[in-house]
Length: 194
Image (cartoon, rainbow, N blue to C red; front, top):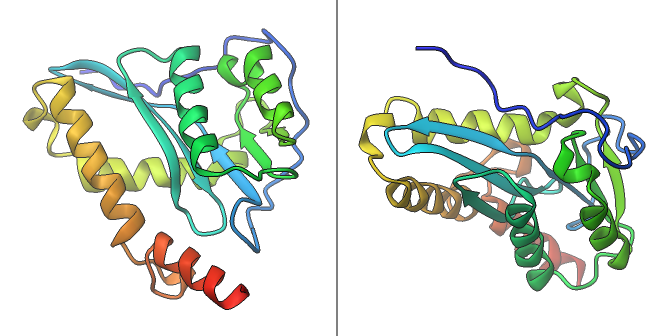
């Protein structure tokens, strides 16, 4: 069996944003820096593509979409979910790789309308987006690898990922955020800040 990583880069199809983040992954408050990417799952269900948004402040999955094809509709749905939860995003840095979805004018315009600053990794440099790459590794290691045969349908995979993201956000503690879950860390920060 051959394994390869999903690659969304298809050359320059739109505007390439500067790498404003420049590997500075530290965020001192929620909604200061977000990151996104797409990862692929393969199994008897076929292929599925997960597109999440992570807040670099606490590692929280802000919004996500799982689809049988990586396309603009998936990215649009993911953004709508994020924007419906978070209203004031002016000045937020939104980082991604140079995938065609993120170069698309529609994506850039949606960010601009919210006052969001777009940032992109250098071409072919996964370390520039290591926060989300690390999340993908954790999710696949804890939820998918070794369990591939359990997911016979897309619906089964979707349910497992939904359950995992809930667990990841609400229950999975991390030393980096004072041994709290991402949600608890954000709530604690907000209550101390007010």
